[in-house]
Amino acid sequence: MITDQLSEMMIRSGRVGSSELEKALAVQEESGRVLTDILIEENLASSEDIARTFSELLNIPFLELDEEFHLKRDEYDMIPQSVARRFCLFPLVKEEGVAITLVMKNPLDMDAVDTVRSLTSFEIHKAVSTEERINTIIDKCYKEEAYVEAGLQDIADVEAMTAEAAEFEANIGDVDQLLVHANDAPVVRYVNLLLMEAVRDGASDIHFEPGENSCSVRLRVDGTLRTVTPPPKSLYQAIVTRIKILSEMDIAERRLPLDGRFKFKFTGRVVDVRVSSMPLVFGEKVVMRILDKQSLLLDLGDIGFEGRSLSRFKEILGMPNGIVLLTGPTGSGKTTTLYSALQILKSPTRNVQTVEDPVEYLIDGINQMPVRPKIGLNFAECLRHILRQDPDAVMIGEIRDAETAEIAMRASLTGHIVLSTLHTNDATSSFSRMRDIGIPSYLTASTMRLVIAQRLVKTICPNCKTTYLPDEGELEWAKSISADAEGMTYHHGEGCNHCKNTGMKGRRAIFEFLEVTPTIREMIHADADDLKLRRAATEGGMETLAENGFGRVRTGETTISEAISVCMVD
Image (cartoon, rainbow, N blue to C red; front, side, top):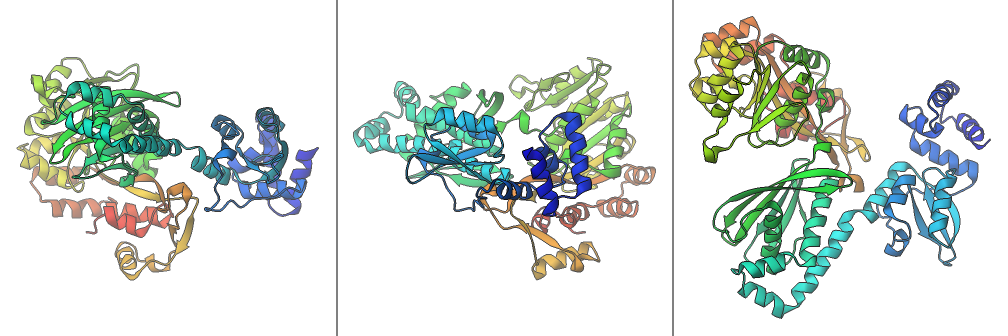
């Protein structure tokens, strides 16, 4: 049997040990899954080990597929994207035009071969590569951004019709003309496909920015803005109008800031988009916030909590009263952590209520209330009504003023666990911030249970991760955090297609976890300044943001420069 031969060859080549193979076979017998998948998932063998063994066993080529490799359009058009992704393969057309080479993750998969044979009239030969390399090629060739480029070309073709473009510019104040152009096929296609590209790349925002003679479009991915191919300036207003139509905003109003919201479907899931427009000198700037619930991490462990911090956070959430604060700048992941905490609080035996501005993600089992400042329904007013609804736990999107803070603290004193956010640089600054907005120290001291300062650091791309020697400045920072920093091994990403040559892919949270102990409580009551509180907290075992960030550097999750960019050294 070919699987037995594969196993024997892997053992003979030293790519897997006999004990590891026995473990994988036991899992296969129990689950019925493919043996090679089990070996990879259980970290018993790498995908490259398995691919090279297939190559030797079946006498077929193993393809390295470097970054310069690219399929021709007529090659990847032969097979639908769904088939390529389902079987993890792609076709290469042979020069004689009578056969194709099928580059596969699993060359033993006869269903894949039969499916491709039914779609083409070519004779099929096989080659093998790793799942990661094949998926990189599939992403590069099939990805929606290739079609976005086609949409852009359509727009460029429209722009070439100078008479029509001139007519549009002349009638830009005409609402009927705006509607006509906003519903042109190239404009609709461009907006739709840009939205798909944003979701596929995990972008949080799309920025449309007008200039005098041109415009720019940028996506924010992993906290950093990157430019994508913009449309011609002559059709910029038509694209803005299209977005306004989708968001049910007033297309005739271009002098005032506007807000809107819409939903669209992508790969079977519904994605929310929040839209904001603002008048600038050369036109309206539009920012679309992508709210993809599938990308929302709802597990505290996945976010970055671990060890004692994770267990203690869960214990405090289980307490009957008190305030838990998340602090940090905009875009530091506070909302994600709050929603993850709500998932822990959610229970058929609890009434969990939120007040948010706006409600970003809808969660079943949670009562979510949006503020509406235009009709006088602000955070404080919402809280008053919520407390009449017999809540067990309350989440306040943000504490912005003394009235909201005082109601939240009174609520915690009357038997509610309250979660909220505050804009401060570190955990200990929260107490002076409360004093600044007018909250008595005795009230803060008696209600506060936990303050978490949070930041997001970019993580190193696993595909191009390698060791490197940090420069002198980076090493000095590291040595200020840890005495053994000089002898450590450091990592960074070299850059590849998977991470768009940035070397970084994804983000992970780092924390400053300050539990309000009796000692800290007494110091808050005595109006101790931030420096004294911070010294007492660190002496009591609090890990600072810089220390927690360096912990991510130590484990090879991020780089020194990334940790420096978001952390402070005391």
